[in-house]
Image (cartoon, rainbow, N blue to C red; front, side, top):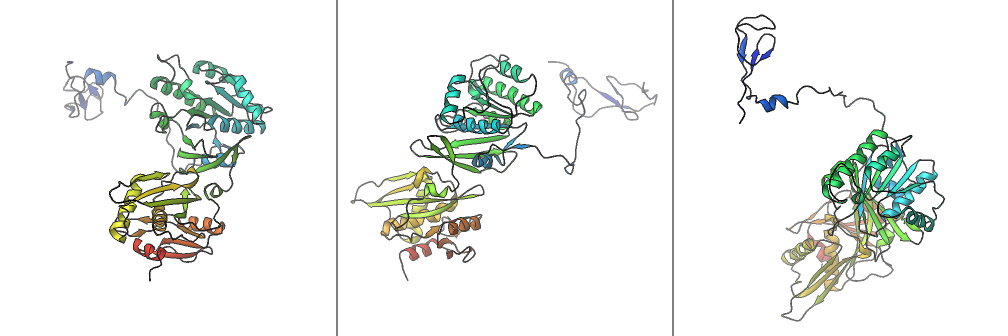
Length: 457
């Protein structure tokens, strides 16, 4: 072990020496040198002290007048909405999704529209040949777009190509798991390769002002494959979701340094590619001409966008002794178990001898706790076989005590429901009355909702 070194400091001029002396050699003062009482300095620390030898960093105040970053709109409104207004020059965006969900199609459409608007756009594919990308572009009706295509996996080759002359305004890398950096040993797709390749590409984007888009693979549980640090390195993380058996696709913003999070863009997969859906509620609502027992409409909220979805419940009574089944599609099964327990303990309804099936129509996935009241209403309606009025919506959070708690942004939910022709809202008691043409029926306890649906006194 290296021997610790002691440090002596002059109290007059601050001069530092390795040994004590009666007179300071710098200021010639006597009896001013004392031993430093701070941490002992080892030879390693003396050589690796980062408090000196660097370049001073320029500091600016919060009130400094700096121009906002330039945004490039892709002319796809739903895509720009998820991005917070469009691509930002010098930003890095990571988009992930299941194989075949439409990531490459969406990015090719956005790249083609940007190129047609006069921007320099480059599309680099590590999974397909340039001819395959051209064939897809022709199928989408984008064969005449001036997009620069390349099939490459070497990060050095890519950066050498775009490092000369004017850099592109948008650079799409499809996908980051296929990129390879010769500075790191290992096959493409390994943790070290993904991290190193992304770091070099992001550095290029920041230095040259190019909007970079990285396509990422996902694991079996739906998270983006590769090191978690990849999501921290980029400015925006988008998740492209949807079921192959359903037509719709949802582009969800998970992280966005230039805009709000939890914003969504809704698309429909058609023969000519992905088309925008101006009214997402129309995708998730079935024909509501006639009221059906066990169905309730819930105004979900995605960021600042309300989306009306239909919650469907089915309750089947079993013979005594059979084990009841609980099946959930599009919602948390643990949350369903809690709602059933509250209905039994606080409202006197028995589901212990019934099979319960819960489904969110259209393949939509709910995570909003405000759906508790709508789920409870659907369960009570299915159990009693008394339908909820077709022109009604329901929202509210339920506590274990059976209390109906208020939820955030109730005004947006009511406004969207009124726009689509709904007339009544089953909501928490503190919700403002009769907003936007809706008659609001408030409940402070879950028992009040049960009495209302069962038409008790």
